[in-house]
Length: 227
Image 1 (cartoon, rainbow, N blue to C red):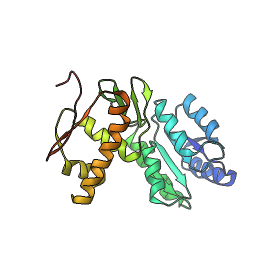
Image 2: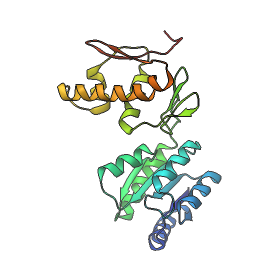
Image 3: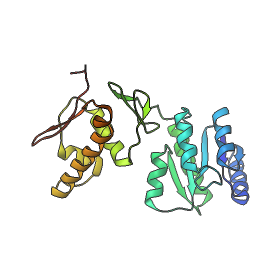
C-alpha cells in the first residue's frame, strides 16, 4: 500500500512517516499544496493524508483540484481546526474522512484502513437539464460551458431538483433533504428565497425559465425535450 502525506510541518510529517512505515505502508511526502497536488496527479496512491492549513493553496483546494482531475484516491484530511464548518467544507471538497489534531496513531491507522477498504468511490454521474450541467463530484455548475457560482445550499437545492427533474417536488421533501428541518412558516419562506436566488442565477441570466412554482404544492424543474 502506497500513501502520500501532504503536510507542511516537518516534525509532524516525519512522525507520520515513521508511524505509517512501521505499520507496513510505503510513504511519499510533500511539504506544500502544489507539490502534493503534482505528486497525486502523476502517481497512483492508495490513500492521501492531507493537511488543511498549507502555506500556498489549502487542503480544500488541493482536494477539489484532485477530484476535478478525476483522481479518486481516498483522502483523509488532517487539521487543528475542530469547527463543524471546517469538517463540512472538507467533506464537500471531496474528502473521505476528517481527523482533528492531536490524534493517536492507532486512530489514524484505523481510519486509513477504513477508507482504503472502501476503495476509490465511483464517480457520480453528471446531472443535466438541457444546457445546464451539475457535477456532484467537483461541485461545478455550468450553462453551455459557462461556470455558475452557487452557494453550498443553492447547490444542494439545485442538485435535488435535478435528481427529480420534470417532477413536482413538495416543499416538505425539499425541506427534509436540503435543510433537514421540520416544515414551518419560516423554513417555507427560506425555500422561496433560495428558489428566487436560483432563478436569478439561471432563468433570468440565460433567458430560459426552468424552475416552475406549482401553487400550493411545491416546485418543478422543467427540462426541455424530456417531458
